[in-house]
Length: 301
Length: 233
Image 1 (cartoon, rainbow over the protein chains, first blue to last red):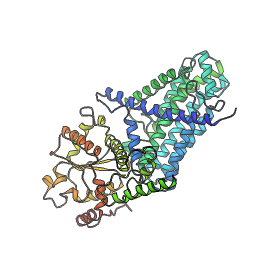
Image 2: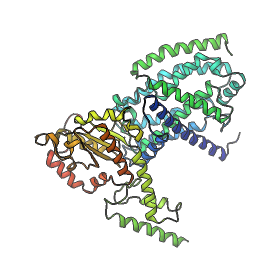
Image 3: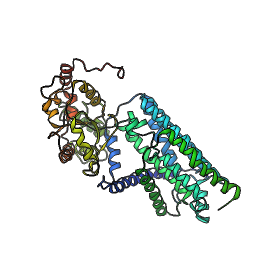
Image 4: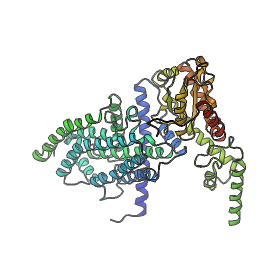
């Protein structure tokens, strides 16, 4: 398959629309959460205002590692978003492999870790260390589930998995326990409570973000929105059958993000050791049971 | 054609130089790093897109856009020194809901836009306040709560408390009351938003323009602004 310049433009379009979508959706969620707390809440486009305000501000620098890491993080995440299959838009056909996401996502995260460490603030280093520790926690149960899925379906292409689900039922029905584990791991990936140990504003002064202000913080906010878009899309594609058209995909996307936010808003924060112990107790057990049911007994396949 | 372009460039440069004479009246230099050349960058970038506008109109357009975003997304850093701080939780939570104005608390000075000074300042905390203020990225605004920041309030004759805060850092807005009620706090924030939107909250430019004066006052009060302890060396 040849990749033309049009493909790249469409892929950039996917990344940009993903950013705009996620920024709007999180704004709507801020509003509805405010209503749940009997407040009025901000305008739905408040997150856009925040980002543009930050890009308007003057920036300081803590050295070239600090600046370069931010650009690397943003570029890595935009690169990941370009591969994301959205409904029937699959830009780079044959390259939308699950492992491409795993590796490309790490580029963005490492960029951010590098930049945060480059700022020289000890709280940033603690935040980065906690983020990586938490990653060790949620990656294992998530990988167990996804590898079992890939084993029974005999493909690791996201769009192929979506096609199988469109034909023979969503993975939510085929592997309900696995979907629950996937959702718990998604909460960890998004850094939603109770898994927001590495941000922890009252404890670590927002962790890796402690030294960021102005343009760099604006770029990191854009990066955060696109990363959320990629993670939620991955969950929708893997467990909820993607979407046969854009509207279906958007509805599923909205439901998953809103649910994650609502769950996050009624819970407190775990300590970092509690996060890892939690992931290594309940989700990993459920994941192993589900993998056994799928791989050994072939239930639901 | 080339000649025409050259002339235009010259015009743009000339205007920039003219405007830079009065630093306080100059528009906020949002992409520019030097205070003396506000908007030099924008004017050249935006020239092709809005050819019909005069440079002055173009500058005003950019400025008003920047002011709109700055005004409607204010992130606070609360320097809770005195009793007025107790009025902020009500203003922040469900009863008065500060978030509908786009405001919210932030964890560090680097991320924040406005610095709230809630009450009296002892000489010891003034040093930390100056450090904090200088760490914030521009444009930045300062709000003083109660009479203690204005004239010393009930602590006016204390040996350890400064009386007039605006001699040390520029204040954009005072909120009256001892302590100000949450209604007054919300009203004050709405006033600050209006001031920023019309571009009149220019304390941070004043700090640049009269930096020596502020430094001298700080030195007179503190002897030395530098902090010597285990966290700052």
